[in-house]
Image (tube, rainbow, N blue to C red):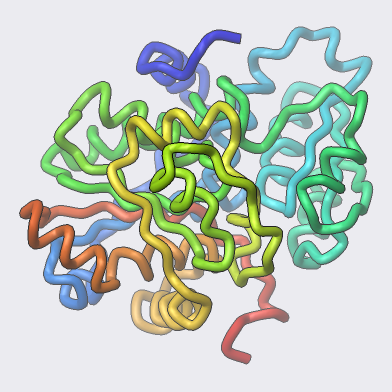
Amino acid sequence: MGEVSLSSIRSAADRLRGAARLTPLLDGGELSRETGCEIRLKMESMQRSGSFKFRGASNAVALLPESTATRGVVTHSSGNHALALALAARTRGFPCTVVMPRDAPASKRRAVEAAGAAIITCEPTMQAREATLAGAVVVPPFDHVDVISGQGTIGLEILEQWPEVQAVVVPVGGGGLVGGIATALKACRPEVAVIGAEPQAVDDAARSRTSGIRQPPTNATTLADGLRAGIGALTFPILRDRVDHVLTVDEPEIAAWMRFTFERLKLVIEASAAVGVAAATGPAFRSLAREAGWRRVAIVICGGNVDLDRLPWT
């Protein structure tokens, strides 16, 4: 399968040209005043499918042989990877099946079905998801070299759009996003800090990085449902070796900064994206920024697929 490298990420960037969108890096507005840093937002919520997941899914599907059309592709996902894979598979004419936890947001289920995928429902645990897929050929949501490499193209774009960036804050679930971005950034500009952001309720990435040993997920619930996956076998070494810090935020902070972004910045973001905003505005990040002298900080807004019937402040 190879390994995630600058070369694999650059190849993914070539492959995705014309398929994935070059998402904007927006002025963070009031977030800059809140943090004391110049904040810019990498708007993967404006990516095709509404999240960064389209990059990794498209890269992986593009590399599959034409014979896949007879068997199709399958994955487990709470929504964003499912939608991304369904769209990528449809582009190549491949059937797509998704195993989705029963408590996944209704809006994400509807979007996946509209993209042409068949949905199989399971219990909302990683063990249940993986057991349901036993024996199937899977395009996983994060723990796959081609998927991670696709996500790494975001790191290349940030450097092209803002060469002066000093730190990048990235939400962490299974680790594919932060792993790809960290690989790209550290290969091109090793002095740029990579900061993972994670809900306290599902803090296996923080615990794994602190201990140096991959820790199991908690299976707890969080507003940031897209970040509930445990850190992967492939993504853990990248997290350990290339990510500088992992910060955690609590559920009230996630809800508050999601609402702030809606109301003050006029941007629709999902709770998983709000985790990065909450981390970048918190005291732990401010202390790190003062110590390291970071003044120019990018936050990856990983997705904008929001169930408007389940907003955390209604």
